[in-house]
Image (cartoon, rainbow, N blue to C red; front, side):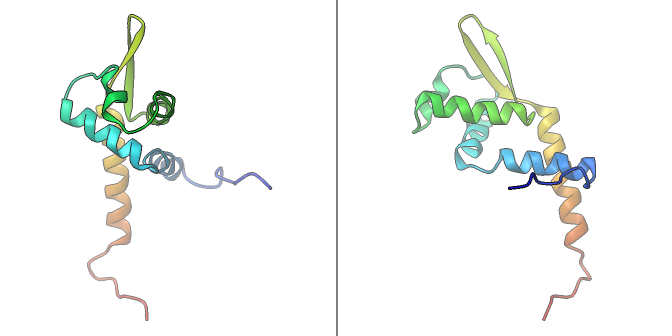
Length: 111
């Protein structure tokens, strides 16, 4: 199967797609909600709060970190995670721009 051609799209659209992909699993949404509710770095208790195995939670954390939506800080033998405000602003601004461009007040429905 040929590789998907993403290089023909704007950097902005590529970045927004990457962020959207990071949100593509309900566990990742749940992790973001937990981190937002805690308003502090969370270490090992994330695994206790999720109905998933430790390895699975780690995979979801890696996806969110690679997308720039969370940060991980090493604290001794463990990693503590918190929201990345800059990444979340990019996400918000990207989707706001997308929605503003496709949901015009004077657009007419098809059909």
